[in-house]
Image (cartoon, rainbow, N blue to C red; front, side, top):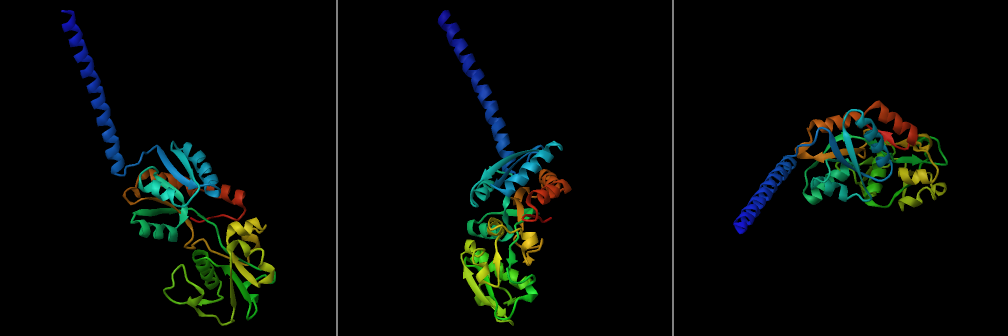
Length: 280
C-alpha cells in the first residue's frame, strides 16, 4: 500500500513539473516568435553606441526618455563591427555610431539589411590653415594636405570640391582619389599624409583637411578655427540604424522624438562647443 502511494505521488510530481516546464517553453517560444517578427517593446529599447560622444549623448537621451516612460538600455562598444553584428542578431534594437557610407558598405560586404531610421551627429572634417582666413585666399600652387587613407582621403577631396577648390569626375562617389580630380584651375598640390600628422604639419602646408578628433587633439575648435567645414547634409552624418523589419516601429519613432529634441541639441551644443554638430 505504501509503495503504491509513493509511486502515485512520484507520478503526480513529475506530471506537475512537466506541466510547468511545458508552460515556460511555450511562453519562451512566444517571446522568440515576437522577436523574430521584429516587434519591439513599447517601453524598452536596447541601443548600442561606441564609447565617447555617442555614449555621452545617448546617456542624455536615456535620461529624457525615462520621463516619457521609455527605458533605454545602453550597450557600449569599442569597435565599428560588433554594433552592426549585434543589431542584425537582435541583441540590439538600434545602434548609433556610423555614417551612411559605412552602413551601406557594411550591408554590401555582409549581405545584411540594416537601414537608417534617423540622423544624429556629424563629426565635421574641416579645412584648416595658419596662413589664410578663407579658402578663397589660397594662392595658386598652394599645398593642400589630406589624409592618405582611402576613406578619409576621399572625404577630404569631396570637402575640397564643396569649398570650390577643385572639381571631381562625375561618378567618383564618396571615396575619390587624387586621380579623380577633373578640374584644378589653381594647380593646387595635394600632399597626402597620415591623418594624425596633418595638424603637426600644418605650418608646412597652405591648408589641410583634418578629421575632427585630430583637430581637437591639436587644440582646434572646428566650428571656430576651420576656414571651411562640412555641412549638416554631409553624407558622413551619423545615423540611427535598425533592422529593416522594424524600421517603422512606434518605439523607434518615440526614440527619435527624444533624440532629435531641442533639449538634446542644447546638450550637444553646450558639451561639445561645435566640435560635434546636431544634424537632424
